[in-house]
Length: 449
Image (cartoon, rainbow, N blue to C red):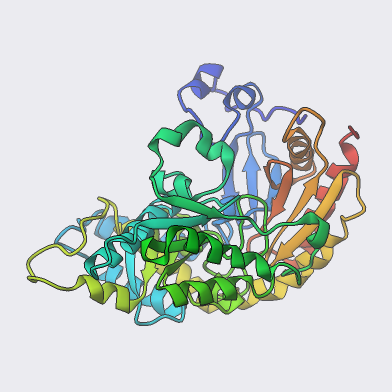
């Protein structure tokens, strides 16, 4: 276990008690707090002054690193000019221009963008758009949604309903939306262990969608939602041909295909979106996180023009889609997004992520014979290792490696028996190799068993 980070001189245990932290072992954390004081570039500074390499870009969301000057200045200017603008029956110019920029960045210039504040809200919004689209077209029976096992689609009620991580669902079964089914996940360690990029085996797993659709009848199915790469559950990479097959089945049955790109959007896979990197065109794309380097909460849904136009009927003075959020298109979030896209363009960051991907791949696969490691996998600028569990103590081994890696100067991400890396695009090749070496030292330091 790591040495507890030093609290601020004025801090006491009481200071930590009021915040019920998300996705955190609160009792353990508050006994041994790890407090971040500042972030600059690819590094965080912890309380006490120790710097650690940010090996997961915040939470998959800060490809520019922390406090990039262009973004900082944009937000400072914006808060002094227009701090808030209502988005119901009013608007501000920068939100409209940002929507156009994002659609163009995605290679979908005719798409429309519905702004929200998080990935969770983006998913719930996409599900509502999908069901409402079929309804306005006279196919109101199409209400069923198909998700996938091990999927993470945020923590809204729609998101956990279509999601497939049991721990996120088990307490909330009475609240989940009805009419949801799940595809099997695509990771088979007996056939995919230590895959580099997309596994060659597994495209046929998409054919399970045909069985599910037949079970419920296509006329009752509204949409299929998948992550191009399942990130939060541990970098589960789609087999070659798998997503293409899902697209083919959805098209044939008139079912909408939604890509949840909250993690894979904005360059993580070496292309603007995962849809580009993997060569599949969905009907809707959710995004958040890296759209504005996570500076101010922002997310959204890219919606094909054909879907949007289906809603644009009836008297013009009536609202076409009864949905939205107070902070949709918030001026500060929008300003940060414009500045982030400016930096992407000025520094060629998508190409940089693509160039760094093989560096991460080569380094991470060098861990396959290290203690505890049972699998290594990667796609784009994202990678993960699985570790052998401690009998009767799920997730303990990964937590031990995470703690030790922090002592070695690396902030990684652990979930279940998986440790993931997704470094900032501004990282150097040596920093990426150094992060993997820190993980190697951590693996060797954690005792067997």
